[in-house]
Image (tube, rainbow, N blue to C red):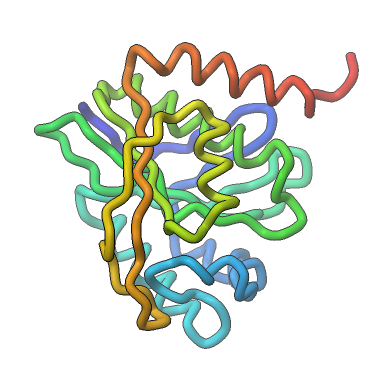
Length: 197
């Protein structure tokens, strides 16, 4: 498996490998406490720069590629997502640190973004793509299940969060032989957002 930073785009979104030039574009979007309620690290308000610096630092290594997510129609930055825990020997990668501004939640952005990231991972040779979320984040769990990812189980008391709580983590995955069905489902969902011909 070989994953390297690259611009990814389709008719709905453009994913640009995270750079310091994205910092101010993302700042106001991140200033939404709802985004960070279930995260292990806080990134709103005064916590934003530390979160952003951590994403940049992690992306400088071999195990993470962070992306600024842009709406293709407006050209506006709408959120963040990343490849995490990139394990070349095991051909395994996680998609995570995903969040979007409130105005684009529930639309084409998330399925379009997941389509690009999953496609990139499997084209690079991934044998397993993981997605995980907080046990109390039911919205995220529903979104991941709706992708067609397989629910694998729960790791209890898995992470300490910035609130001081212990997080149960719900794991999902997609394997190569499942990707064609997942891709078809995502493309079917995206057709609902396509402009009329």
